[in-house]
Image (cartoon, rainbow, N blue to C red):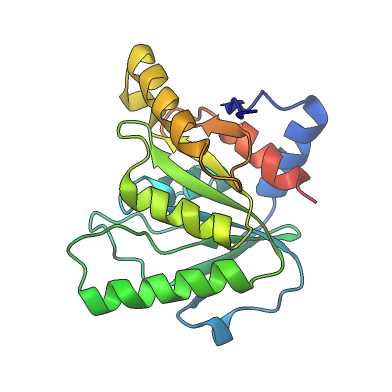
Length: 215
């Protein structure tokens, strides 16, 4: 039976409040990591955010945490080359390097990929990966590579559509159909999609609630 991949529902009051309180408190940068031996102790649940360069990952993390400059948004895709760790209450939020930036040097790209694979396959406290997909473009081949890696690493991932305010309702439905079709091939895919707009605030409460209620 094929998964339907419905849109994540609006959170119940208790879940919404738990999410609000988590991100209303201190959210602090811990460290940037360039090798596996630099990871902080695996002493708490963590979630990570992955996405193509320029997918709007920094903007989403800033909106999620209600901070303007927590994650550094850059006009130069591929600039972030570290795994960046943040704390929010009893969670680690992990910002992974953007992937798919064609102009980065081959050696740099290879290093990112090795680090990403090591992290995804070797972090026992990683509860869920949120894979960001641009609503204007849908899932591309380079996204599919990451989704396959998550399958192989047995890491549950959930797709977060970004920049939903940049397309019409009809175009959104068309892209969602493409995304659902692509996700059907991935056993590690969580069966709900979160649609977000960092500018308009759409989906932010839902994502907060999901992160806060993971166990």
